Length: 432
Image 1 (spheres, rainbow, N blue to C red):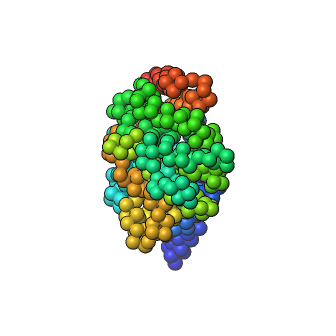
Image 2: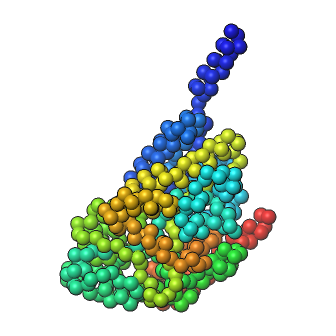
Image 3: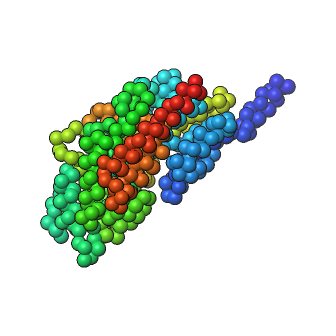
């Protein structure tokens, strides 16, 4: 009887044991933040979890703020268990030495759906053949266009090349009505994407993937060609220059003040819902149709931090694996516009007729799949990416404001980025 009583007591204690808390830092705000919170709640209550772990989300600001906070917290050994980090933070996260590569868990878990992750997405987050984090919110830029405005000026399809983009923008511009042909946010992301679209790398040493980058290739013919195109459309008053920030460009497009918009696919359902006109979507144009190239994966990924108790690390992996599940990826894709990371989910949604109902949501997927498998589309790796982006954006601002020529401004951004790379690489060498 005593043994039976002890057994019952142990079972009761186990059932009433408080779940292990796992801190999750993220940068999703607004509706996306609410949806993410719902996915976390699903995990906490899921049969897989069995109430053993409780993921506690904490919003840590923008991507840049979140990355800076992670770096600071690791120095103080006070980091979270899991962190959602911007795509350009990959090199920094590896260099911190404070993470456990996801590949280490995958190698021990035959049930992880690694074969279902789309190859172009996987390639971005793989370094030296090792997958370091789970691609979660993945995106690329697409062209949104106002079909009503197109029909009004006799345009039957979206532009495919830079020359067509320029020509179409002129036809769609109406100075008297203060309507522009096209707009997009002033962000380095578009500079990077349009260079890759032309098949050119951003950095030396194979975009920093062969070995550490030491030089920015901002003066390539492809970079100059794109910024020149951008500047010419601004000077011709066919481009609505709204400056930095993502919302103004989208607002202009939805208000009919610009007939074309290039922005992230992560906003696709929001734009579909709000557009007061017939909406079309298409891949972003390139210099000419014969050029091999493509878009780069954007968004963020989930990282597992080390130096935690074994049980907490186990729970962290269970959560990350759960976020890669078909159910979660389906809810995330349908609720945001970020495209699924899983091939089987795309097939499932095709069969369900989802993309017939929302064809705009499929554009980014087709664009990603049609991208050439090359170093340019794998994306660049550098530990000073955020700093470099600021240099590029400042350079473009100077060009558009007539303060510098394209070559002068990009040369300055290159010099500043090269200097930042030298300082960063020297710091790592000293640390070793």
